[in-house]
Length: 182
Image (tube, one colour):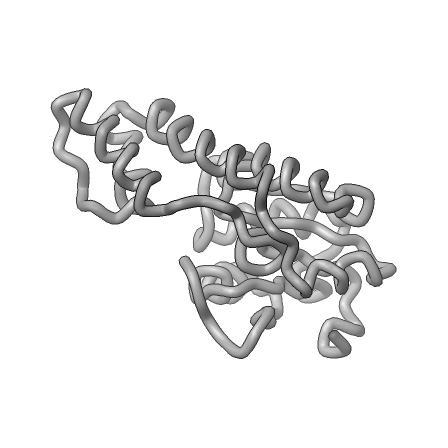
């Protein structure tokens, strides 16, 4: 992907960019809803990410996070590698991963596809206090790669990824023809 040349570091999203996590997100949302139900607490909506965002206020963050992470870790073990992952191995600049998935799932997926040696930094949903589209996860990855935001590019598959890059002052490129996913 020649458009990525000229940057001092590249940060990739994981799911939908390098691999396709083998996760039934509707089942995850149902399981997270059950966490709220078991606590006799009304969730902030049926959307998985809204339930995650509201979990701390409801006192359910640890249980909700573990429910989601469990599905992600399992799905990472059988996640198919996407064609763009080959681009990652061909790069000579520092490489990072910044994902809305938990860090352990990211590491499992990278390891399963032999990509771990090509990646210098992994920042997952649970690595820092905030999550995409907040810029902190991406800025953490860029900082750990030792470059300034304007020297890096973020490659992802979603509008959330694009917003994250904009907020962080990092150039952005879609992995495909445009947004998909979360």
